[in-house]
Length: 352
Image 1 (cartoon, rainbow, N blue to C red):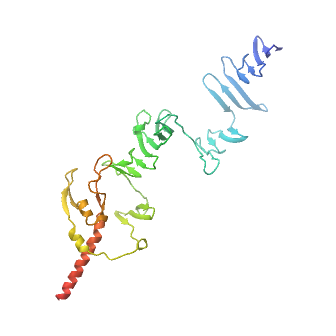
Image 2 (image 1 turned 90 degrees about the vertical axis):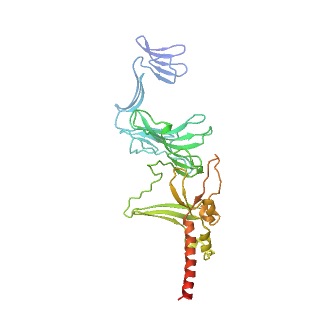
Image 3 (image 1 turned 180 degrees about the horizontal axis):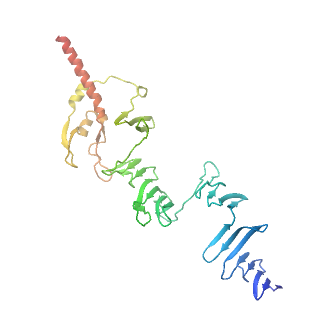
């Protein structure tokens, strides 16, 4: 029967309150004191809210002490929307789509931004106040995550590096920050196998750490021509290349006539070569023999063949060595040989 109390309207069966409408407008089913606009209470069992059309059950909301489930019970998708428009769905095969009504796999995401300059996608946040990782982890099974991509914060404002982790071991453990394999820092420097863009005192945009058995950079082109190329450019355009074809490697510096002006024949080739001081030596590192020039001595004669300055040091006090580009010496050798030939031809003409 129904009773009208001072505060609540109740529908009772036996001695229990089955339906209660409180004076505040809350409805309780299975409870006399609902804490929300509608509360279902099955006592010690599970609460189940079912949706049906023309006698056919299409979905339910199910709650027990172990889980909470929103479910479509027939082969129809479960969709979620805002502003009367679908935003996400789980289809009958378990595929998940965000921003698409036709997900092709369980992981299909098509998150659409509001305009061409807005961000569209997934945002991963780490609320750590200083150093922390916010990103995506990848699992090889249901137990262990073995790889990750994330932002490694370096200050409280969120500045940091984009890092790539891949577990080095096949043990029963998750990846760790010690499994970092690659990073792009906030200055745009790209590093593989190292977390620092500074090696031997030099800062580089691309840094690849190598061991004795592993090359730092491998260029591979699987074509019939078997040609690989590395191109070096600056704001003025291409300045050099390294090319391979078959088993041959060539090193090229830009020398197109259209890139030059005020072209003059080289003079004093013989006197320049005569001033050079070729030497033999042994390297401090391993006592192995070598031959060539001492950089600062060559710099005094052919400065364009030498990089760096004598006795320069890095910020940490370590040696900042000079380098020699021996290809820059060749043109002087050619000029010297031409001078010798001119003198020799003149001598032969005078002494037939």
